[in-house]
Length: 582
Image (tube, rainbow, N blue to C red; front, top):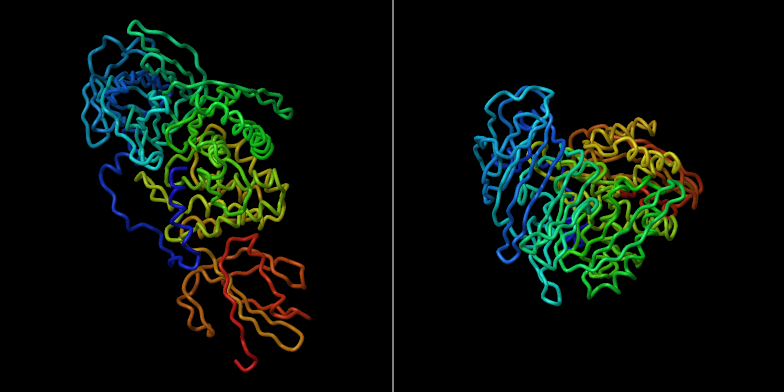
């Protein structure tokens, strides 16, 4: 959700200013980008099975120290692997368990080299394919502080109204390796994880999963041990430290016969506000259970934890900082007047779109943000009906810049355009309209969740699934909407006589048009997609435009009575009125 603030700027941009098929490939990247973004041989040689993160947080010094044990499976024979840890963080020692069932403590330290934020660890002997091994990285340092969390990564060191410490971390995009050593690539998630965080006396730490143990240590500090029962992506791993007040509830869904625990951790001064604001959770869950399927992390529960920044979709532990206001910090970004707490509704949808299903390269983050933004519109539909849904989803159009493709550069830790939020949602809305079969559409949406649950995927997986299960070849649709910066423009030349309309129409994918066809630039790539227009007064029907000119004759209709259902499709349009003498 970290790019949303930029929408304030994008509100002034309309879809008229899109560029001509700018595929965004001219950006400059560094060796550090390659080391972070590429699934190199030093990364693909192993899969992470389990993380055991054990750290102590010194709040006064803004310092952390501890270790992370990485249990991994060797995919092939190798003698060196790559992990990631920001270069400002010090590695104390790397230990190796010589056998899978041995503890790593006491073994000689492994040799390693560092290049930017990458750490290359060398083993004394070849790690054999199929073997399971563990390494333990001891480290310490001052992790970078976030200047504008959550839009830049780092720790937020704050205080509550009573002067108590209040600490959180957000690292989407920047990388989890800014504060803990890991294989910092979205393609690899541990099957489970243990998160142990030691904090000063009187404070609480809340992390992902279930609290398994709370231990008062000899120095009066408290260690909280949280266990994550499911695969988790690195940027979702979190800690929240404060003098929290807890309250809880349960949610029962009769269709799935499960009871989901709802755990809320808030600052004491906001306890009464939270009890009222968090009433929005259950209606949201009703909607998402119905449309997306069962909450993906039932064993770990659902948590909202008050954070010193706006919010983040940390798995089973959503960071909440919306100040108990509806909208986006009290602002209705849609302008529709439908009131809901943006952080609760948006970040909770990420439990399905981004946490359960995760892209294996951040170039495809449109899947996380596009489907989650679309979930907001579906939530409005659940509460207020289809007309309200149309109003809400169409409010996204003004936020689209159409300057860069939604998909970024693969292997370079490069996200696509900020349009991934509104344009991604409008893309899905347009797919729904083209299918013209809500039963099939929602079957596909739920099927995506069932098919790819707890997996890392890429955009092609989603594209193929939708085409195969809808019976419609959407390949050129996805190429245009995802991999170019344009949207199709429906160009119409309208000739009106005394009684009838003659309309020539085609899609224009780039360039500008005028009264004469020859002003069009070079031949357009082929593209086709149906949309609805009024072939009879006040009655919409499908037409099937392509990039080739077609003609329709509409009897007994005036030009002023001809409309395109632009509320159902995200396209541009251009009307050219032709006189009889032209």
